[in-house]
Length: 418
Image 1: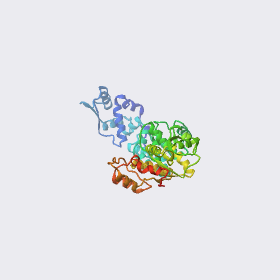
Image 2: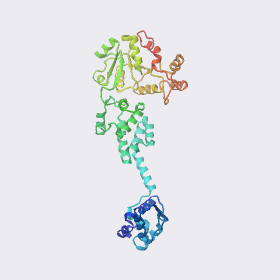
Image 3: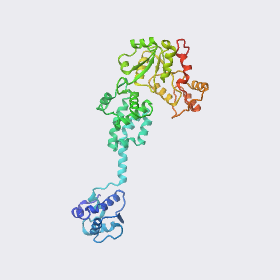
Image 4: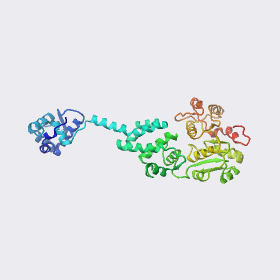
């Protein structure tokens, strides 16, 4: 049974112990009860004021002693309360009457940890349904980000429920406006604005979902959202092409043998109507520029990702695939290049264009100077698992620009590579 509060004379108790000059003593009582410690033995206050000494003397009916600190024995206070009838059940009942029911800290911690566990339930369900997000979800539980952003289990539950709703609807296909997506999914067009806790959590999930590299700044956030098909606008996302046909504008540029930049807006309104049977894809603009310089209008169709595939690039490639095109891909021989290639492979099928372990080893052997060292976290190469091992073995990076002599003949009118 709980403490019988009716046995405490609360009016007399507040006159005896409720004074401001004894607040320190009541605080010590409550902290002891929270820790499950008995209300016995001495408690001390360093550098007390004269008023605090006088209040302790009135409580005990005698001076509590001299010295620089003030010491009060709790057993003596308990005896006063029982003897006076103010609290027949002693100091514990009096402390509860003064400060309200006391929850032991161990119980409070268990209750709070249970609440935090429940708050992560949307994350647990999301990881179960989306295996790509399982490692991200586990990391988010452990790194303290949600606790820092939300503060309380209740706020965290709301935050993670919204983040899960966002990530379940990604990647957006076809690409769409970020603000419209936020309004449709969360009921507010500003729900995913920069700097909000939800945008921070959702963007970390987008990286896990799409393989977009880590980074900071407005340009990085724009690109990260775009990797999942969410756009700040429909003209910032672009893709670079050479000798692609299928619209009057593309035909005109192909006749001139000049590179062309396509925006997502152009692809939405004027997508190519035809596609060649084979299209080469590269990572770096230098390859496309060199192809235009070398072959001009005679170059094979070439698409340049310029790093991680943009929403415009993915939209174009999906369109061309639907028209019957197949793809060959080449990128930098480094860990970042492997991640870009793997991200692309999640969206469209492609075959390697001189982008295997054998090609890497040949490029290392042919290098006329020592290539730069390989840095960063290792990545997989699902199209050729031996490529990852080869990079780890040689530990140097081979950039596309350094193998142009090998790549450019594959793009010429008389190319025998297919």
